[in-house]
Image 1 (cartoon, rainbow, N blue to C red):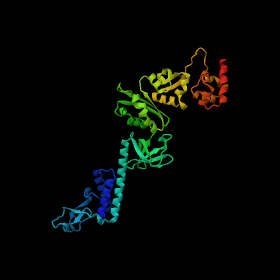
Image 2: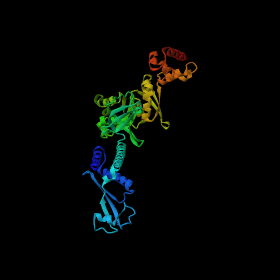
Image 3: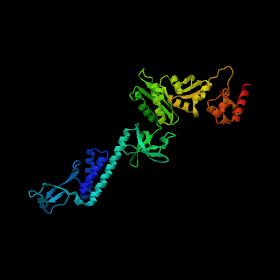
Image 4: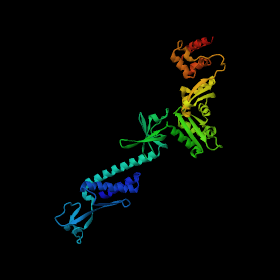
Length: 412
């Protein structure tokens, strides 16, 4: 009976796992052969025949007939008297083929075989998983949250494979409970302790690119190309798109009627602000679009240094810089140019003075606060109200009034 149970085990493995027939036969044969080597010291003179469909196997041993008393290796040789027990016509030098009854090896051998088989199948599973997910790098997968730890989450895909979503690859504001469904992109597959580790990400620009492909058929069909994506996950993203068909407005197609297409993406990314920008090889125009929503007055390019000086009306400066300098940082990453922002002043006749001239009277950290919101000259500060300055910097109202008095004195 043990024999049949063994085969049941094989067929169970066959049902459960992603292993093809040829591989299965090879694994079974290897497992039998390793047991034969353990018992007889060699498996070279054995033929192993596995029949997966019938769920059985045969093991045949080939031995050379030797004169009585001259048998040196009973595994490779058989005496003439013993050979004639199988068939009376055998002669010395001929080959005897007889079937080996696996049961006679005892339970120990069967146990060894089982363990060997389980080990090999596990290795195959790992290889299968590794190659399957290596091919899926860059694809979005959906899984169920199975366990949540401090630094990562364990997610199970629909086949029960384990995927890891590290905390660093989650969007700030992501909050998942056990049993919830998560969408993320496969970014890499590593081997850790001989086990494939599949790492997911929701912060990768590739994740945003795939979401656009799902929502915008024109991107999926290749009519619109995403040229570049830069992201501050959960806060803001800029996506440069281009269309090869003049009849298609790439930005309009990505945003959709009343924002219908982009809305789904924004919701998936916890209200990340997404600026979709029309790509162009005209650097000036591209920088101007990248600084959206700020309106640019003029741009001075320094191509050899990949740098641009951008001039704006005073009220546009803070828009261009964005909260914590985020807008200008993303615009720089998108265009590949280092962008410096300057305000345009109307009455050029009266000289403006750089804030750096006031280091004797105003502490440098206060000046840094003002520069952080785009005020680098005395007039740029005086153009703003006390209320504005209080709201946009971390300075006290009293400090701001003192600064304004010092700066005003310069022009009196």
